Length: 429
Image (cartoon, rainbow, N blue to C red):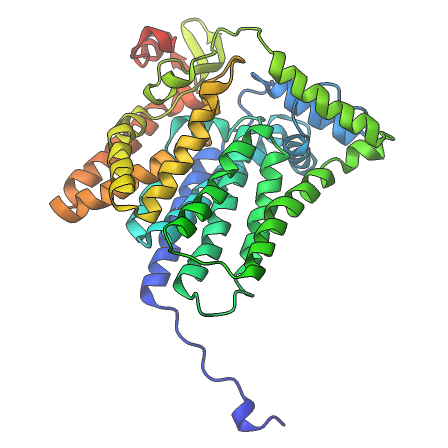
């Protein structure tokens, strides 16, 4: 029999604030799931780039050579294939993985905002605005890679900041427990790169943040941690990237052929000049000049179904002046949360100013959560100064837009007259 001194004591009760935060997060995640998961079977046919990614996933499951989509690394197609294996080779199967990823994105952004600002309102507002943004919603319901890469990117940021908070709050303690978050961040970073190469640039936000903190004298990493950082963000992503090519090598391909494919992928994107009716310039994305019709067809006389990939203008347009305040605070006070948001947004977004190939609104997706968290932070300041009425009115407007536009985001049948009333500008058609 164990000595009484060795018996475990009573379990400490979970603080009330922690329970409230958990319930709030659960409610937002359930809301995100409930609007994303139903009706994935509509349309029943492949739309937009599903004809490449979903078909490539079918080929992976068939164990044959992938010929449909060879211009990006394989992870997104492997994830879509897993969804097909789970839910069948039909529309739900093609899209279920994206819907799950879009739901998880709300939770990950909640976690990142909570770590950055230590403010439950900022975290909840960020997650709710993520859940009700039109572009994020549409990307969560189509078999394309962009929702996956955004989830992996922000998963890497959240894990990195969990490590960083431990070092900032307890610099005198050994970092053995915290470094596991570095390796989780590195694994998420590797998944992002294995989805699309364009994530390499946004991931540089992590070393930039470390450099700023060290330059400002706010953190001094032990030598052992420096080695862990190098291993986590170099060795782990390389390992993850190579692991995603296991099905490729199982088909009998050699390392020489793998290298040739990487070169071919680079040459494709470097030389791509073919235009598209819905391409848009990078500077136009924040003001929503040119959204993308992923699908539009006549379901019956004067009744149409459509999928319009468009951001929530209530969020996007309010986010611009709000983010100017975030940038001002970052530059003036060097506040770390705002500095991280500014660096992440600028690095993720401005890379496209130097890319000459045709671009689309969905390329803005990795920058968008930074804008949304900045908006939530400003809303928290407004709430503290003038009360919650104005803030909740704004959030109600954002949710109201999402509800009103849900039919055109999810291919519900609508009269042509009603659909045209929703097109505020000619460039939206």
